[in-house]
Each structure stands twice: as C-alpha cells, then as structure tokens.
Length: 338
Image 1 (tube, rainbow, N blue to C red):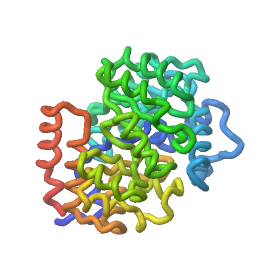
Image 2 (cartoon, one colour):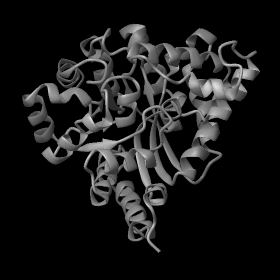
Image 3 (tube, helix red, strand yellow):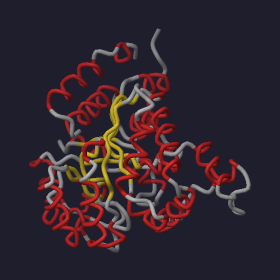
C-alpha cells in the first residue's frame, strides 16, 4: 500500500549535517531541566515553554537561545539531553548526524570543554540506533581569543568523536575574517571546518567565509542569491550548503517558505543539503523539512532522494563509511513504498 506523504518522509532513512544539540532538546526534557533549576515565571507550564519559541527577528532568536541555556548548568544535564536527543533522532529514522555543541556558552557555569564533551558522548553512547559525530561551535560572539582556546581544548577530545569546528552566533556583528587563524589551526589539527554565513548577514558574509576561513561547508548560505557571481562560484566549487528552510522562516531571515531560494540553488547545481538547525525551537523535524519542500518549494520525491544523497556526500565520514551508509539508506524498502 502506498504511503502518504507524512509516512513516507518519516520512514525514509535520513542524514542531518546542521543540527545544534542545544536547539534539539525535546520540550518535555527542557521542561524537566527548567523545574530542576527553579523554573521561570515567564514559562509556568510546558505549553508556555513551547510558545516561548517564537521570534520577532534573528537577534530575538539569539536572545531566546541564551535564555534556554540557563537551564544547562551541570555535566549531567548534557548527558541527559544527549541521550534524549539521540533517541528522538533515531525515532525519526535519522541514521547519521553531525551535531554542533557550543562549549563557550557554558564557561560561565565553570564547565570545561573536555568534560562537557565526555558528558555528551556518554549520553549519545546509550543509543545504538544512530551514529552521531560532534562539531564544536567556537561561537563568534566570544571573540577569536576564546575561539582559539576552545579549539585547543577540543583538539584534546577528538577521540570522543569530535570531527570538526563550526562558527555560529551573531554573524552580523562578528565577521569571519576575525577567525581566520582559528580555522587554519583547526585544519592543522586534522579537524573539518564549517561556518555559518549568509543567514543574519548577506552575500558578503559568505564571500568572507570562503576567502578567509576556507570552510568545507557553509552553514545556511541562504542569502547567496544576492550575488550571481557567488552562486556561480558555489556551483563551480561544489561547496556544500547546509540549508535550513524552516529555521530561516522562523528567525525572519525570509518571510515565506514559498520565497525560499533553495529550489533555485538545487536546480542551478549547488550542492544543497537540508537540515533542521534547531528543530525543537522551530517546531520542525527533518521529515517536515522534506515534506515542506515538496508542498511549497517545487521539489519532487525524486529530488528528496538526491538531497539525501547530497547529505551523505557532504558528510565528513570517510569514503568507506559513506559508501556503507549510502547502501543502507538506499536499499531501504521505504523508498519503494511511495
């Protein structure tokens, strides 16, 4: 019997490359943490907590991100959320994910990068149904010196599945060139690199990331449409974009999903991957992202298969593991049940 769209997108095996651990905490899990630390008068119930995740613009989203992080103060909190998040992802048939975590956000609570990473890995290790690699976000808001410190600490725990660094935060206030040395050092440590660009700032930010940071992927890159030469460069260099459509609407980067340039990028030949960014802060899931692309952005189910292939290709797995993952994904009978 053919599957309806909801079932199809949920059941197909999937890969995610742009997912923030702290933005993927299931609501009931975050509510438990809120209660652990005395609650908040603004969120007297789980329903109020869910409503808190609505944003006027991108700076308001960052403000909400900081507010949420107040309820992550101890290493055991990260073990707790990591396990819950991994179970949630596995329940969506996401087989592999590369997940950002943000050590600098938690220095204020005296949490050390190495022990924080250990705590996260402990939680992830309790869920065997999904393979999760970690990307340390050096968080541009804390400046290049803190980013360099975080990088050195992250280098000590690569054995815990930390495979790269990213650069998130307030893109509009901290240009990429400030972090050029950090990214060069990361490469020398054998780490992969990605940078948020073209989200809260425009095409110049993407150019800055490409020229100064030389990342292997661009996080978001949504505003590349502002520069035709940039679009041609992305096509020519096959530089993967970690596109997060629903996130872009929720943070006000674009007004309507129907206006999102993702389909144009895809048809031009840009290596597009689809991701959720902060799914529990946006009421999203990877299945919903794919369903939305077919309903509102002109994608076919065959295109969705290509997007999943793109994600495998753009992942930082070794070639042998990529091949095995692709075989497992595309031999799944769910693809034949549409």
